[in-house]
Image 1 (spheres, one colour):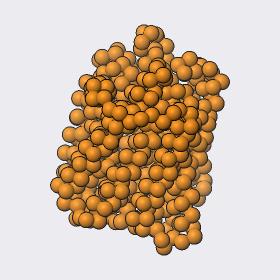
Image 2 (cartoon, rainbow, N blue to C red; image 1 turned 90 degrees about the horizontal axis):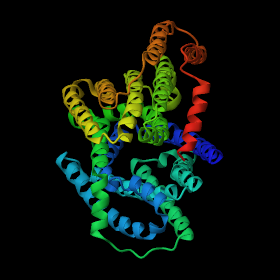
Image 3 (cartoon, rainbow, N blue to C red; image 1 turned 30 degrees about the vertical axis):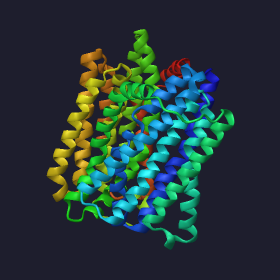
Image 4 (tube, rainbow, N blue to C red; image 1 turned 90 degrees about the vertical axis):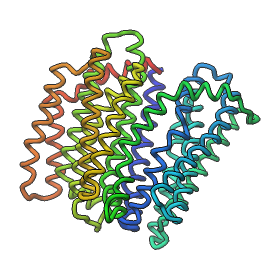
Length: 482
């Protein structure tokens, strides 16, 4: 089992590291460079709107499917029948919610055209995720991993090839249509593989079964909706409130793109922690204390190191990703969003811990505070300060949520970071903060990048953020949960 775990993990990380960051930082960034901030800002806002209501396409069905199929794989046909019909019903509800919101926001006909394509794309994404959840429930992890990256690989080939051979063909309409085609091709591939292994079921619908799924998943769905609101509503408000809303949204997207890439790795980390936290909480094992301290040092300490390197080299990073396009304020936006990621790293740990313990009511209350904070302060600052205001509010929102999650974990579970761990995290943070000013002296960009990276690595070892023996023990623990 341990060998299987390591092989699956290695394949998943390898494919995701090779394909997804390239897609985000090269293809998406390249499209924005060609289209400009204002045009891409329109896309970023519309995408954010479809993502906020995305939970109504899933409603926790995928997580339920993984658990259900893993325990009772003989009921795959019945489950598949009901869920497919339920998804079609949810798709109609989702489409209505998104379009009514767009109508209320005063979007024009071209916005609705793009929005319709993005709505269909989100439906394809969630349907692919559902089929992947079946593969995961049946422990077909290699197949699940391959399907997870096909869409992005196709996008790299299709859009990347066009950018190389005929960049003038790249328009916003072309970009959203290309994504739709790539996801549709991936879904067709996934369905063919599924039906080659299992007999295609006849569609039928059981209201009782479907309502049971929704009732069990509702608390998770509400939590995800609230999290999406405080993470994604800022771009929508920015477009509505600022005189140059679409341009500012495009500027914000430039910094947010790197945050998205980092968020992906944080989610991989959280996905590994969830079953371990769940198992140890169920067993009431004291090992959870050690796991909590280790994960905090790795993720929070690591995020501080990433933020340090990113902030010191913000100018180089933006020039590398966006080539000749340099916008005033873009570096500052990136810096604040990198600081927001350090707060998000706390959320990955303690949010996952509270989710594993079933404290969904507490999580929803915390998320409501996050939504209120984000909306109120974006209403106050977006119109005057634009994208940089959104970035500062994003940092403040994540800081508030992280503090609430930390103290809620201590209050409800009596679990928190010990003094030893806090000292090491604060130590590495303080050490890097002091050295930041040393890098303000003009120097060669290569020396600055490699110098900041080596100093960061040095700090990780000096403050024992990287503990090889503890990491090895954690891998062993993770393998037991598979």
